[in-house]
Amino acid sequence: MKASTDPIVQQKQRAALEAVKHVQDGFIVGLGSGSTAALAVEALGQRMKNEKIKILGIPSSYQAFQLAVDCGIPITTLEEHPVIDVTIDGADQLTPELYLIKGGGAALAREKIVAASSKLNIIIADQNKKATYLGASNQFVPVEVIPFALAPVKRKLSELGAKPVVREAKGKLGPLITDNGNAVIDAYFGEIKNPAELAVKVKMIPGVVETGFFVGLTDIAYIGTDSGVEKITKPKF
Image 1 (tube, one colour):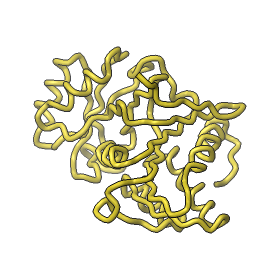
Image 2 (spheres, helix red, strand yellow; image 1 turned 90 degrees about the vertical axis):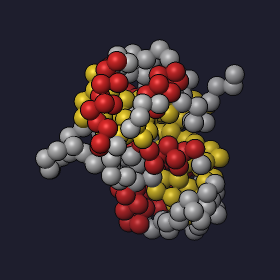
Image 3 (cartoon, helix red, strand yellow; image 1 turned 120 degrees about the vertical axis):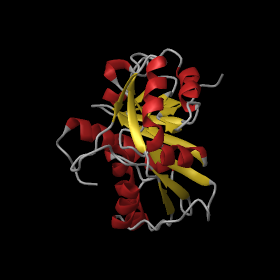
Image 4 (tube, one colour; image 1 turned 180 degrees about the vertical axis):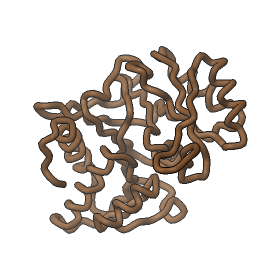
């Protein structure tokens, strides 16, 4: 992991270094997607070189797959290892209750499958990702949608109070296409007081493949700060 002078990147690096301490020799590790999770993948590659530990990675996107290969992490699949020891991933937003919004990188469906297959889920983030309520500061909720259903899903999301925007691709015309061949709608709900309830309503819309609501899936979050790392653990109800 290269040293950075950017304070936000430094916060993410602190969180990543704390998270990878949970990985032990012989572990099957879920590899998250996005720029923050990438720091953990790089740190795992360094641990393999320095400590000679052996792990197998299950990437949650093609981006994570490429990075893992670059970092020397052998890849496996859920078919071979349906139970993952630990997954480390980032988040677009999280609350003190460990309710999350993910999917800014359009890998939400695979990220959720990997998370749901894991014994331990760890989220890493910088302190700007913390919020009292999901949806604060104009944070959208990504929704992966079968392209055929874009119009009716947009209408249903509007009925639920959202402003739905089809995410456009960068470098090409038209909507962004996920690793699964689907489109993504970014739904702007404003502050969400009951994310668990809304997540079910959105997921039940015909044509919706997955939502960016991650509720009840996270065990530990490491939040990088300017002075160290804050640890949040899953509340016990």
